[in-house]
Length: 339
Image 1 (tube, rainbow, N blue to C red):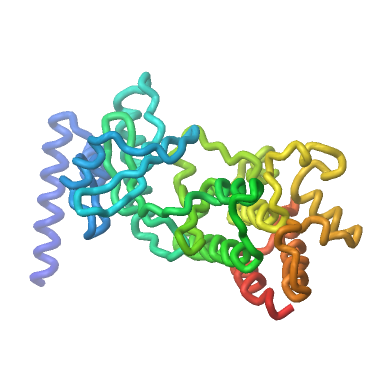
Image 2 (cartoon, rainbow, N blue to C red; image 1 turned 180 degrees about the vertical axis):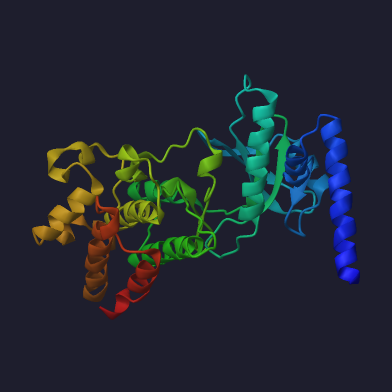
């Protein structure tokens, strides 16, 4: 009886409140949505005990070292007062001519996505440690990794400034696909949506960490470059199998050492793409021709590489359904040495 009475009281109160709001010209449903929507937070939002808001704000106010830039924003390296080095991504500013209401809607959407991404933790992901909202953009704070991105590392390999043997390259491939597997198995599923060489960061031990995952819907100037799967040019429908295509491109680069933007891939001999080239060589029985000469060595390793060529070719299939899943890839790549 007591419970029923309380329910009656609460219902009666709600009815009175709604009636009063209607009298004042306020839509109760709109008011409810207003109360439940994400507030726009000011100041740094911190997800790491190693970072203090004032320390972060102080560091961001200084001139920081530019690490790189893209149409989506710029990366900086900054050192906090406690000695911690972090990487900061300043997203491309919102359109200045957008209505204020639209800007607020975009900010709320970005905040909700960032709160979700901040909860993701895996050794092969660049963990979001904090973010700062500015009037026209967001600053995202990540752990700093010293070796740089995979594109820069492979450029150094091609310039003979760095040796990268097959064991290390396989380690990188396995780490990348394990990061993808974690994202794809999240509930709700998280798609990287912008996987490419420049978004694979490497620490001092060449352990890969995926950057920019899950940010695609927040970035108006997304540029996937040569890693863009063919379905994105037709239907614009991006799925987990689209991520797999992008991984196939990374694996192809690790195996061949070739720059995916090399004019070679525009020539008939390459069949017009990395995937076409790998499939052609495989069908001709010449898969060894795809391998970077600097990693050819022991016969056992060569067998692993040839199997990896087959895996890369499968990932680069034009048909999404024919590509393996991230679960399949983790199993295949971690067991390569058993072939």
